[in-house]
Amino acid sequence: MRAILGFLTLLVVSSASWALSLGDLSNQEASGGLKEALTQGVSSAVGSLGRADGFLGNDKVKIPLPDALAKAEKLMRMAGMGKQADELVTAMNRAAEAAVPEAKLLLTNAVKSMSVNDAKNILTGGDGSVTAFFKEKTSAQLTEKFLPIVKQQTAKVDLAQKYDQLAGKGTKLGLVKKEDAQIDNYVTRKALDGLYTMIAEEEKAIRANPVGAVGGLAKKVFGALGR
Figure (tube, rainbow, N blue to C red):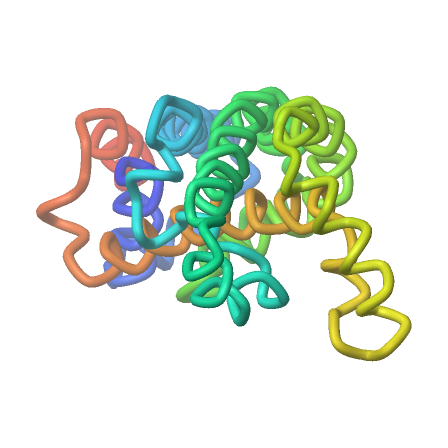
């Protein structure tokens, strides 16, 4: 992802070379280079999350207990249910880690199908443009991919099933958000949030220091565009 965003940022901040590059975006070499860099970044982003502790060990994306349980967590621990709460947190994050590798193909396909207009939006969109692109192109499909994997993981935890029963009643009373009424939907949504959050974090860091973050591939592509 650093290779991607460093390349994009260099294009944005350069002067004469940038002006020529934007007008040349439909050039096969430029388009192919951008897609290659994006594909490389997808592999990096998915790899960092789709492994043991990719979510659980990262405070930026770690999935907490749903609000309805988080508010009662202190009481749960006083009642001797701390172990169950910890098991649910672990299961939710393990579910996200198991699901994220499924994102690689869809994210890669989004890059392959990227139009010239998409590329221009990425290059001129500023902070968040890469994240916005992937959200628009992949969020619905990724939800469908993630959900069954998440269900397999959370089904192993008794507290998850109990949560669904309680949350269903809580929704009717307006105490639980509708989208959080089932643990599987909650975890799926949080897994997607985590994936896009990490993309956004990388994008922000690269835009702040593009020269220091650019990889060899991005430099090669930028050099080809500047000639």
